[in-house]
Length: 300
Image (tube, rainbow, N blue to C red):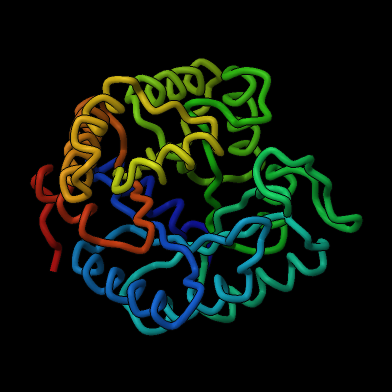
């Protein structure tokens, strides 16, 4: 496969023709029950023909083997195009090359190149592997130099927790594009303005890399507040008020979460976002309900 045949070029052709990209993210399950739930979600979302699906690492790269196995299975037994996560955490350059080769052998042709969180979790000091890489941009260069893969990278509408400011974030993303990244997927966020301001900052730098907004429908107030605290992503006060008004009813919380996500998605698409990337948490119901609210139907 040449780079022109990869997801990056497919995405650009898709968008240039007026299409919108829909994609989903899963994480490696911890046990057999979790794996059954994951595959149920995959099969329910597969008919929507997403442009790709991604499979994450756990914190500190702790689920690398399961990530590789699940990604390989998706490539082998579904119609989906899997994007495998690849991080610098705890790996030498030689080991990273080996992982890329393993993905290629499995039929995977797209990676999400990330520095990754420190093994101790977000907020802990970052220490690179002594024979490894220090930044996502280094990983982008490694993948570009050693494979014909398409490469996705992370973007941060509300700022990376370690970044001094939003302008710095935009410059780093533009540098990733210059190094060979084909597209970016944002961390989840809750205000459309954060996304559009990031795109404007990139444009001012002369960077036109497609940036797919990452969406996480709220299904549990405490969970989303924990995610927001770890990532530094603010949950807007108006959203908090709507969720807390029904906090004693879990079903109502999930319904309000779907409403909020649907409103955010509609604003993003109306404003010109090239598509939507859903952080599913290995569940399909909320994503399917957002699709219904947006009028997005199954492709087959």
